[in-house]
Image (tube, rainbow, N blue to C red):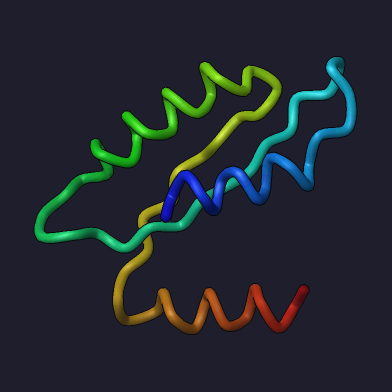
Length: 75
C-alpha cells in the first residue's frame, strides 16, 4: 500500500529532472514499529526515483484520522 501511494504521488509530481520533488507520507505505528520498515521502503523508492524525496511522519490513532480528513477536505 505504501509503494502504491508513493507511485501515485510520484507519477503526478514529476516536473523536471532539475527539480527534486518532496513528499510526505503518513503512517500509523504498527505494534511498536518505530518507522524502520517504512524507512527501508522509502530508501528503495528513493533509489529508484532519485528526483523524489520522501519524508515519513508517524501519526497517532487519536489525532491521525482527523489530520487525514482535513488533508482530504483541503485538497
